[in-house]
Image 1 (cartoon, rainbow, N blue to C red):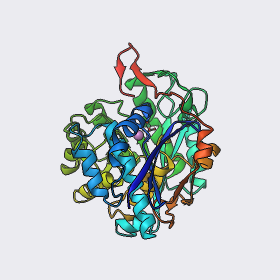
Image 2: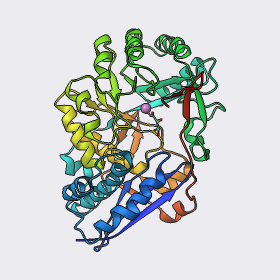
Image 3: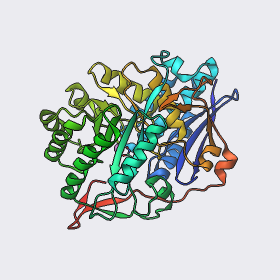
Image 4: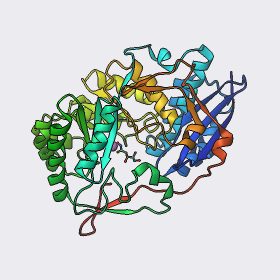
Length: 405
Ligand code: EZ4
Ligand code: CO
């Protein structure tokens, strides 16, 4: 079997997605997700110009060798653009292998460890009341774990909550230049403690609660927040601070028993090696699309497992349903799976383009038994929605200093 063609398909059904289709000489094809928010065309060009030509004529069954060829063979290792390109090819090759074997990918990984993958949903709101109303509605829908984000009084726009009552998902396709947001750690601290105090009063003790700090704190501030949130028993605190110095998490860890999660921006095992081997974190949040595909993420999950760190893959709206499917296969297999982030099935246009039958019921995702990843991509429908340049916001402190978004 040989790779005959590699198509790079960019579509914007409300937001941009980069999809790779690897076609073989025997008619079988595989799909992969290469979406890198705000840098979509850099990955698409990398694939088109630098990756695809090297793979034509190769045997798509040699997943590991192709992964190593694209990683070691490039000289410029790692980095989000190169690793997203590798990821998309890798997912497509696992999809092809599953189709050859007539088996879903989770069976190729080693089979089932659980009946379904528990999801955490998002409750966002313009006020604490609105956030808690949304959380109560998600509990009604059967979700057992919910991330709470609420607008901060005195700040015009806050991560996870946007000004005009739309969530960040609907607005993503509509930002030809990066919008600017304002941040104040002081204002945030007051709000976030009250949010969780009132959440426990209103939602009770049985629901798992989570929160994404989105890297807005310094390590010592993150340590203080973790400590102050201890009474409210979070499942985890996400991205409490940046870990470019991985040892920053030693400081946070030493001050709090609130479980810590990080990794959605990481592109290789090296970005989280010290975090994991020192057990400074509890959950690793790397995504297949951004960390070298199923092969890359499987390696991270196995490494995490021997250090009592669980997987909690990123599930934001800027990962396509192909990545979601890859995650569900990994989650069904991984002995140390923790939880999967989930933001719903996407809009109608997305559902027309990406078809799959992963069932979400009672706050859990049930894997599909279709061979491979089990996702179809409608190229004609995708062509109706051409690429639109769009950026994430940037964040500045009140005096104008650039901050972490
Ligand atoms: O801001 O995926 O947990 N989810 C997140 C996301 C990220 C976006 C960035 O591309 O933090 O919403
Ligand atoms: Co996050």
